[in-house]
Image 1 (cartoon, rainbow, N blue to C red):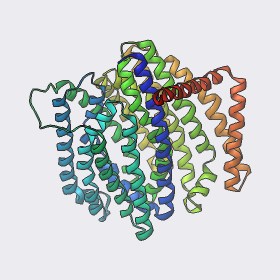
Image 2 (tube, helix red, strand yellow; image 1 turned 135 degrees about the horizontal axis):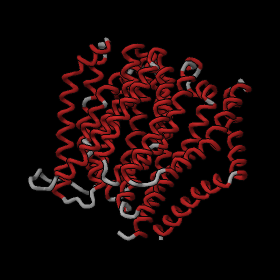
Image 3 (cartoon, one colour; image 1 turned 30 degrees about the vertical axis):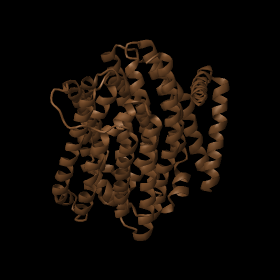
Length: 490
């Protein structure tokens, strides 16, 4: 593929992904907000108890083979078919294991109703296992529009089903229905648009490299998953479903920019960076542009969320969720650093260094766990503070280690991120806190906070040349996207 063609497809992919991500962000926010109005914190706590434990099965079910399929320079039909049957077999096995172990999960938390919840959710493993390689095929062929449809439409329909069920029953089963509908419709759409069907399993297809790469990704993702969910498990065990429900809603809302904006950009970045791995100059230029999305866009979102947390929670969730405010704010600081850390993940995967990343995770993730658990005696707020301290330290360490392994200079990435944080995120946070303290009406406070952020953004653009360059870089990306879309239309 020529550089021009690759750049055009990458631009179209970024354009398509960002547009559909807007829909997914709205869906995610609606899920958090609307369902919080219809269900109690205890309902979210119960479902979080199940998903925080059985969710590791999703990592095992994928086995890192989605990334292996996308990163591979070439992949023949027999290899694709074998990958499909591996994912499907693992998914089916996990469904059986979770179904049989559901009473143990209920006994661990002392919540008998978790047995039926876990058994119902176990079905998602086999459904997602069947869909895995169809999604990977769309990603590998850079069919970003089809992939975004497959990811977005089921989420919207699942949310609609959950809202209807919540209105009718006010039960935690509305959240179970949401996941089942999303998984089932996601499978149906992936199969229908992939234009590929697997054959029978075959020997001698050269699976060794794919399995080794996938194993490295599996190890990394598995350790990361345990790290990300140990807080929920610990809060559920020590503080119960109501406290976990508050923490879970704050966590889901603050992670939305990562899950719904930055993480899906990996689908665009990974195939492009994999093709640029022999051109380190262009490789680093792409990474810097990618981090700009995290530091400038996600950083601004998190800054607004932290500064305006009190009026936002009152306005969106209601006064009964006011205890969520400090948890929401504490998690937001860590959210900024987690957004920034996305580029190190891209570098490892695109350069085929999944094993080296796994080795780093073996050291770094236990340290993060210790920071999280250190705050447990102070409840959800203490855990949230530990979360942010841990991920701030991890961001510096991750870039240093990645630079050492890849022999790339990550110093520009550190400088870029610190600059945008100091000139954009930090002032907007301070302005938001000040507005929240001075204005009691939540709607007016949010409006004033947004206006103050816009004023500061204008001042920063005019006063700081590096900020102007960052904005111009983003505008340049938009222009490239529009040009490529016009060419596609012609």
